[in-house]
Each structure stands twice: as C-alpha cells, then as structure tokens.
Image 1 (cartoon, rainbow, N blue to C red):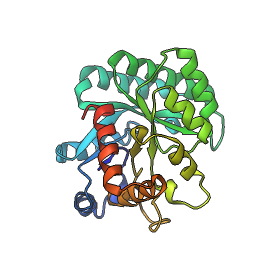
Image 2: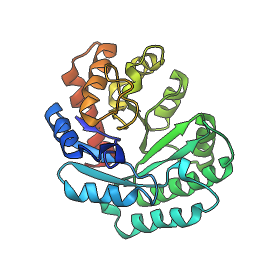
Image 3: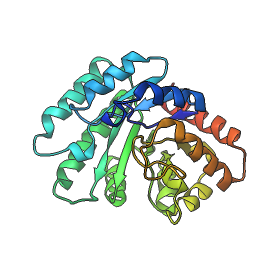
Length: 255
C-alpha cells in the first residue's frame, strides 16, 4: 500500500519516529508521500525524506492555513524549489482553501491557490488539494482557470456524493482516510459511488486516526483499517483495494 498523505515529520513523532516507520513497513506500506505545509515545517520534511529515500517522496506547496498578508515570501520560496529541482517533488501540495475557522483570508487563499495551480499546470505536476468548507469556492476557481481536466487528489475528501462525482469528472482522485471508518460521516456513500480506480489511500497522520484508534495519534500503519473499510463497502478483498489504489497512486504521482 502507499500512504499518499502523511506528516511523519511532525513533532508528534519525535519520540518514536523510527518505530512508527517500521510499523508502517510491517503493515505493508511501501511508500509514504510527505505533503509540504510551509517554511517552518520544510526542514523537518526534507530531513526525513533524505534519511529514508527508499520510503519517502516529497511534495512542495503552501498550505491554505499558512496563508496571511505575508504570503508572498513563502509562496516564492515554494515556486523557487519547484523550478530549481522539479524531479524532487511528486506533486504541488498540499494546497487549497480552508474556510472552516473563518473567511478572513479567503481572497488571499484563492490567489495563492490560483498561482500554485498555474505552476502545477506549467510543470506538469499533480496537485494535492486541501479543501475544508470551500468546495464551491475551489470548483469555481477550477472552472475559471479552464484547464478542462486536472491531475491531482482531493486529499481527505469530506464532501458530498455530488461533489465527489464532480471532482472525478474533472479528473481528480479522492484521498480516503480514517474518516471513512467513522459512524455517520457519510463517507461510505461517497466510496460506494466512486470507482475504485479513482480512490487513493491516505492517513493524514498524525491526524484523523481511524476506528479502532480514533482519538489517538494516527500513523501510517493504521492505513490497513482504511483499506479494510473500503473493501467492506465495495464488497471486495483488502488485497484488491491495496493493488488498485497502489496502481492509482503510482500512475498519478509517477512513482
């Protein structure tokens, strides 16, 4: 399996990072993709990726919750990294819009997302989109850009079936994580409605641990629970889920 979105460089893993990595490998995880947040997290991300090039691949991007009035410096740093060494990064991410807490920087988030989508298009890179309470806003921007179809993943997808179908129609994959195991989350209907060849496994570790680990720190080894739940919903085997989602990830991210 491939964990297409995890933050194993996060401070939550400082006490047992090596052990968490080994647990992931033992659980069947063969690659872990590391999304970028901002310049404060970048050194930790780079250090981890360089320490285990057999296991980790990096993304570069400016996360929407890191966007403020001073965004230009951080965004130019992302653009510079991607242009200087594009082969180092498998995607532009994680990028997007997050209007969950407030809409103070909505216009700035939209502009930062627009610039990063244009850069990904120019460099022929997929995108990893973080969208929270902002599906309509992101879809509007994608239509405005007018690329037709897109390469990328809507990470930790939490929208409706209608929004999921819309995303797939535009070319996106859906990142499915621990939320699919939560009761009343509504994700079973989304997984049921979307073809397996458009789904990706992810954990978003250390966040959103699946049942039976809900409420604890998440880690890549727990991706097994996500695969099991998708298999149950789709009425197929866990092996089929692992094989197809791994193929999906390898094609999308050119792994």
